[in-house]
Image: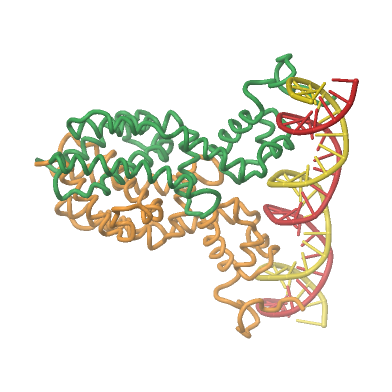
Length: 215
Length: 215
DNA sequence: TTGCGGACCGACCGTCCGGTCAGTACCATC
DNA sequence: GATGGTACTGACCGGACGGTCGGTCCGCAA
C-alpha cells in the first residue's frame, strides 16, 4: 500500500501537508541543520521530519551537500533585510546607528535558525561546503555599513581618529557575540540583558558614543 | 611483525616517538578536534596521526567521548592564564584594561587550538558533550573580570552609568569575535588589523575609553 | 486510450564508524 | 622461571550512514 499519507488526514491526492514535498524538505532541513549542524543531521531524519521517504529527498536534491547548499542559499536570501534601516533617514549618527543596531539584532533573533546556519558557515574556519556563499552575504552588508559610517564621519558626526571599518566590525561583532552567547550569559550573575536584546543595544550604544571614561 | 615502529628510528624498546602513547593521542586529538570538530574526526584518524592503532586509543580512553572530554579538560587547563595581568598592578583603568585586552587576545591566538576547542563547546548551543565544563572556565574568568571593572568604578575611574558586567561582556565579545572572524576579515577591504591583533586592541580601547562621538 | 514524465516509495548496497576481543611483547616482582 | 600487569596490535562486529534502484501512482497531452 504505497503512497499512503504518513501525516494527518488531507484526503487530496497530492500535497498532503502544506506546500509541495520539496518545500517541506527544505523547511525540515533548515530546522535540523540550524540546530544540530551538517554532520549531526542524517538524511533520514530530514525525510522523517518532512514526512517523505529518504529516496524522495535524493529525488529533489542530488546529494546531502546539495540540499545543504540549497538550504543555506535560502537562509541567505531571507536574511537580507534590516539594513534598509540604515540608508533610510539622515540625521544624528547616534540615532541612526542605534536604530540599526537594534533592528539588526532583533532581525537576527527573529530569524534565529537562518542566522545560526549562516553564522556557522561563516565562523567555522573549515573551507567546506559553501563558506564563500555565506561570506559574500556578510561582505556585502559589511561594505554598506562601512559606507554609511564613513559618510557620517565626513559630515563631522564622528571623531576624525576613528576608523570606520573598525567601527563596523565592532558593531557586527557585538551583535554576533550577543546572538551566540546569550544562552550562557543567562547563567551568569549580574547580567540583566541576556533576555532583553534592546537593553543590550542601549548599553552598547551608550558606551560606543560616549566611552566609559569619566567626563 | 607486530610492534614495529611506524615512525622514525628511535631504536629503544618503548616510547617510540616523543612522550608516551597516551600523550601523543591527546595531542593528535587536540589538533584534529580543534580544527574539524568532534563529528568530523574519526578515532581512526586520531590513531593514525598519533602513530598508534585504533584499539590502543580505546585502551587509554574508554570511548571517543571520553577522549574528547580529556582533550577539552587539558585545553581548559592550559588556557587559564593571561588573567593575572589584571590583578597585577593598580593604576589607570585605561592602562589596565588595555594591557588585559592585548594579552588576552594574544593568548587566544597563541593557544589557537585550545581556544578554538573551548570556544566551539561554549558557543555551540547544543547541550552535548561537556558544555558545562567549558562554561565554568568561562564563568570563572568572567566574574574576575567583572570584579576588577567594578572595583575601578568604585574608585571613580569609570562613569557611574556604566554597567560593569556589560563592559566585561563587551571586552570578551570583542576578542572572541576577532578570534573567530579574523580570517574572513582578511578578505574585506579597508581593514588593516585582520593580521595585526595589537592594532585591533588599540582601536578598540580608543573607542571604549573615549567613544566615537565628537568632543 | 495510450503513453510519458515527475513525485514518490520500499528495499537494498557499500562504506565507514565506534567499539570489542583475543592475543602478543615487554616489563616488573617474587 | 612463573606470574601478573600494561602497552599495544590486527581482525572483527553491528549499526548507521549516504546513496541507488526498480517500480508504483497519477496528472496531462496527444
